[in-house]
Length: 138
Image (cartoon, rainbow, N blue to C red):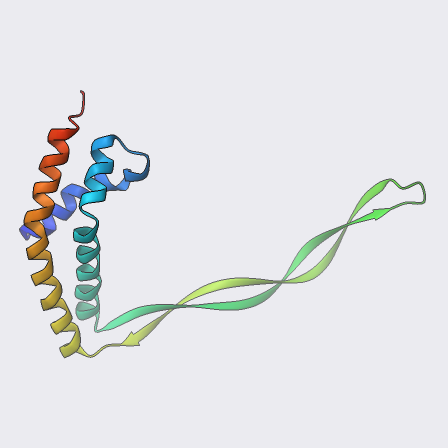
């Protein structure tokens, strides 16, 4: 396992709860966001290269039969709920394969590896600084 991947795996549990986490976790999340973004993009590109294609998504509107309700008032003005069958539109997300240019993906991967290596030292320093600034009580 590469050292960069190990750092990403070590940060993952801490960053998963960053929004509602401790001050230390929020500090780490704030200061390692670019590193995490580059790591995520690198994982996606490596997956594309290993599969030979990329995934993309599109929204598709579909129609399905559903139960609808309406309020009907009787002659005294009391509300009665009536159900009936109706057609409703809903949005579905479809994943589909997209062909890739392996040479372009390889260049993209190489650039991301370089960028990740450049960010690793800063991310490690930020994690150490956050841990020093916000020690967690056990």
